[in-house]
Length: 307
Image (cartoon, rainbow, N blue to C red; front, top):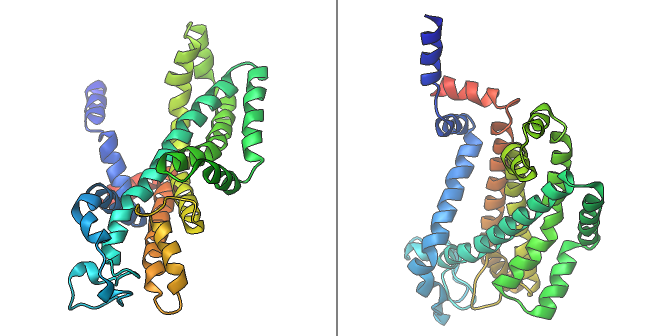
């Protein structure tokens, strides 16, 4: 009788996506952040094909058109820039380049940094020291200074920007992964896998990496916001992505000379950066709790109560 009751309990245990959805519903700030980020991703996918032509069409009669003119079409509600192009359309189109650079840099740096961190933490001390000294060399230079020098020498393009930003962020994932591996490799389940004759690659990728993955996911979410701000700073300095391409940072840079009489040129793209960064930070905080078996019981209890 007890066996059947246990089987029934296991059978009715909700799946992982259902549990994650319930925990997301329990945190309303994280839920709003996810909804906002989903909207941003959709705009990044369809923006250039939807409003690309309108975002680049000049209309000198509408130079620095003020926002909140509800009598015009909706794309003009945020005003127009110095060449009469609607700001709302340009912000939507610029979403793709901004997210593309940030996502490319985060994915590339996280993959390389995680692999190097796994090797540094699980291999011999000599190999680990060589890899860590490489990370120290990269971290000894300010990341924005490296980006400025490299982009000045190689030229500004999306590929160069992604490469530079990813290189400067590799040590973050490398050091985090190595610290986690050094602690996890002494646990009993890793020792048991060794006794059973598991290969080093199997231990790393089947036993250690799944334990490290939640930490790396949280870190990558935070790092996404940092890289996006770094790209905006480089574009603001004039060495990031160049016209006719559009990014939020470039729009802020183009509007800074009109701050006294047309504040909206820099305000709206700046607000888009702030909202996206805030959403990523809220999502990262939720992921840190939801993926931690020690802390997520609070969200699970709220999710059961609400759902």
